[in-house]
Image (cartoon, rainbow, N blue to C red; front, side, top):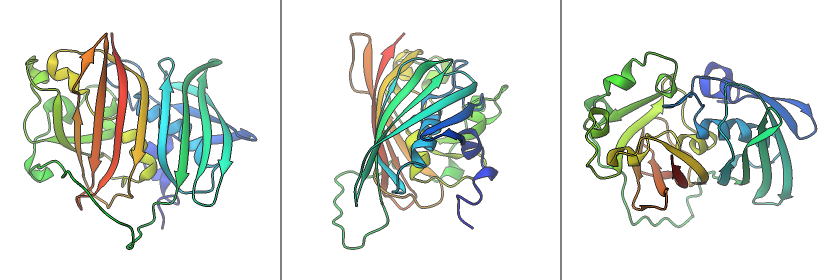
Length: 270
């Protein structure tokens, strides 16, 4: 049985599902199961709902690159997803999508899809290595994440750290760099579609320098490979803060040591 056949068993798939109401136009219902520190749903999750509409318009199975502009915060509730096919080719297809709530655009994205089926003849060169973490079973779960008092993203995603993040205890003099394990809490295997959302599921690296409120302006995601089943090793970091803005880079590696997704976002300190 394929993941598509069993998708309604998993929260991410239920919460990003769309229903067609006209050619290229869909409805969605955003839930509060992906809230972060605010009352707003996580931006990566909202992007996942938008791409659910575009998935159904393009012939290729895997999002290769996605660039999304976040125009205003989303809220739990109904949304409209409008798609446009820009080009369909033999190897790639490109489209655009807008997710709206209350007649106002929340996120606007462009994406190119292709086919990431393994190719044993393809050249492989990697000049970096995945995070060097203890096995997930040997890592700790911050108490704040283990049993959240309310339904939040910590109810939907599991995290494992080699050591407790300093920002949780008010220690804000650290380096804006974190490495950790991540997976869906209900056992959903990661795939190329969900990776586009998961690159935004990390706690912002700038928490380690005392910046506790940050809003994504733009997010670019490169999906590099189909992940094998299991935990994902993640690395998130910021190198430059200035002018009220910062970048954040995210890498996701699967259990076989393959880089499966990378992303950069520009975010605003508020």
